[in-house]
Image 1 (tube, one colour):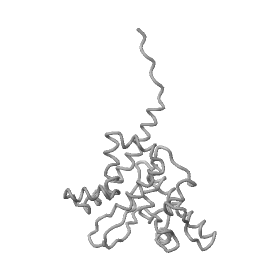
Image 2 (cartoon, rainbow, N blue to C red):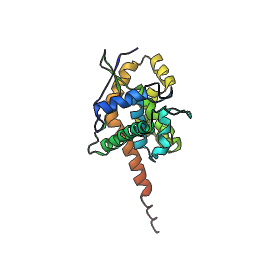
Image 3 (tube, helix red, strand yellow):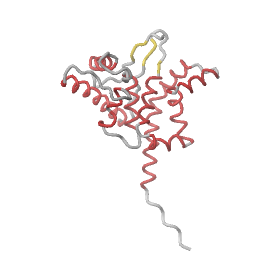
Image 4 (tube, rainbow, N blue to C red):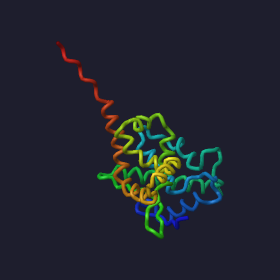
Length: 212
């Protein structure tokens, strides 16, 4: 198994200590087994922020802990408020980065400390979980020839069957993930702009037909 460190390129406004605290809690015995790790959470929140219809926290926060009804075992209501506040601050941090001109987005991906290569699978899996909250809204992107070019690499990275097919075809998955991680700072704003342009086009009034 790869020796994984953490790429902390974009931690503000969370401090390093707060980011480490959140990561440790997500990985702790206090959370359900299927709880997201920090990289997965970052991908998940990214998908929510660039989605056609941004959901409310009441909708997207419970899946952070897993896909069942289990919830973390918080030591106290104060700890619950604190941890949820860290998650919401990370969400707001991402929103600010994506809204900057130019966007200052960088994915929080793991790094193999031995080779220095980025490990993007968890991030991509979290991103696809984010799209699954509202699959109908995301479907036009998947059905559009240009759209699938944008989201296809993320989907392939997250999907085990696709990864197996790529590996069988001789694809170097380690290099694929590393290159995808490097492409995400440009790819994510492009997906966001895809939805913006689509919304603007839909909002334009139809031109009246020419009289003969």
